[in-house]
Length: 498
Ligand code: FAD
Ligand code: 2HG
Ligand code: ZN
Image 1: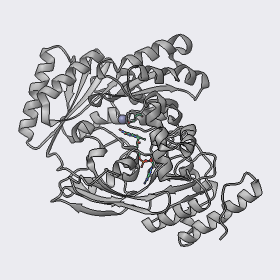
Image 2 (image 1 turned 180 degrees about the vertical axis):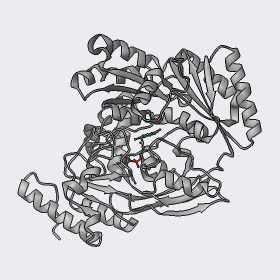
Image 3 (image 1 turned 45 degrees about the vertical axis):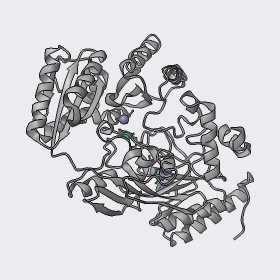
Image 4 (image 1 turned 90 degrees about the horizontal axis):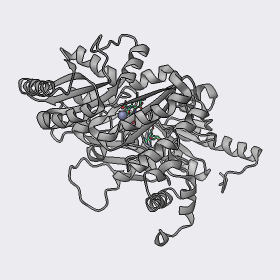
C-alpha cells in the first residue's frame, strides 16, 4: 500500500486516498459494512451532537469491537494522516465528539460494551469503554455497589466518554471527581500502541500518574478502550427533600447548614431557579409544581445517603427544623417514597432536556465563587432585557455544592446578535472572578479557542507540548480542547523555551 505523506488539496487525489483508507478500514473490521459506515443516512446520528448544534461531514464512521480493531483503525488513520474523532454516547455538550467538515474518521465505541469484572471485595469494576453508565450501574447494584457518577445522560453516555470528559454530575459532592474514582485505563495511543494502565489498586505511587492525562483529555491524546473504576457500597437509605427559597443568598446559607448538620450523609445539593422550573413544567409531560400555588425564586434539592434509615431521617428532620426556625426556607417537601423522590429529582435532572425541547440554547458551564455565582445570571438578564425582551430567557441552575453554575440562554433559534451579547462577556466575567469557563463539560470545539480565559499562556503551551509528544501527527480529535495556533507553535518550540 502506498503511503501518502500529507492530505492533498487536490480533490480527485484526495478522494482516491479517502476511498483507499475506507477500503483498508473495512478490511481491518472484517469487511462488515455495518461497522464501517459511509452513507449519509447511516452516519447521521454520529454526525450531529445531542443538542443539534454541531454538525460535521465525516469520511466514515467505524464501530470497532476490540482493542485490536481500535489499534488497526488508529494505525491506518496515522498512515493516511486522517483525523480521528473518538465518540462515546454522543451526549457531550461542547461539540467534542462531533466531526467537523475535515473528512474525519469517527471511532464510535458503542460495540465495545462488555463488563469485564465486578469485584465486591475490592469494591471495583472493570469494563470496556463503550459500556453505558446505567448498564454498569445495574451490574454493580445487583452486588450491592454503585458507580460513583450519576448524571442525566446516564442511559446513553458511556464510561469512556465520561472519563474522557471527566464528567462531574449530581453526586460529585459525595464521591469526588472521576480523577479519584478511576483506578485504571487502557488507552490506544495515536501511534496505535496500547498503553496498559489497567490496575485496580487504590494506592500506587510508582512515578507519574499517567492515567490522569487521559481523564478529561476529550479524546485529544488517545482512545480510551478500557476503564477500571472504584464502586463503593450503594447507600441503604436515601432521602430526598426539595425546598423553596426566596433568594440565592439563602440557598448558600442553607448549604453551609447542610454541611454542618447532615455531614457524612449529605450526598447532593442542587439548585434551580423559578425560570428553570417553569420551563420544565411547560416542556415535560407529567411534571408538577412541587410547591403548588407558592412560586418561589429558587429551589434546592437536598439528598442524604446513608446506611441506617432511622438515623438519616432523624438528621434530615432536625436539619429541616433548623432551616425553618431560622427562616431560611419558606416551604419544602420530603420525598414520601421512591417514586415521589424520583419525581422531585426529575425537576432538576431534566432541565437540559426541557431546554432542548424549547428551541435553541446557549450553554455555559462555569465555576464561580459560590456566594456570587448567581450574579452572572442576573447581570445577563439585565443585559438582555432592553434589547430582546422576553424572547430570550436566562436560566440558572446547577451543582451548588460544587460551585458549578449552569447558565443557559434559551431562545427560539440561534442568532448571532444574541451570541454577541453573551460572548465574550461571559468569559471575561468568569476570568475576572478567577473562575473556570468549563467546570465539567470540557472545552470541545465550542471553547478550544477560549481556554486562555481560564489558563495562562504557559499552561496552554505546556498542554500543547504534551499533545505534540503524544500525537505528533495531530490526528487525535484536532481543533478540540486546544487552540489551533498553540498546537502549531508546540510543533516548533523546544521545551526549554516554554
Ligand atoms: P461523548 O459525548 O461521545 O464524548 C465526549 C468527549 O469524549 C468527546 O470529546 C469525545 O471525543 C471523547 N470521547 C468519547 N469516548 C472516548 C473514548 N473512548 N476515548 C477517548 N475519547 C473519548 N456532564 C457532566 O459533567 N455532568 C452532568 O451532570 C451532565 N449531565 C448531562 C445531562 C444530559 C441530559 C446530557 C445530554 C449531557 C450531560 N452531561 C453532563 C454532558 C456529559 O459530558 C456527558 O453526558 C458525558 O460525560 C459524555 O459521555 P459520552 O459517552 O456521551 O461522550
Ligand atoms: C446538568 O447538570 C448537566 O444538568 C447539563 O451538566 C447542564 O445542560 C446543561 O447546561
Ligand atoms: Zn452539570
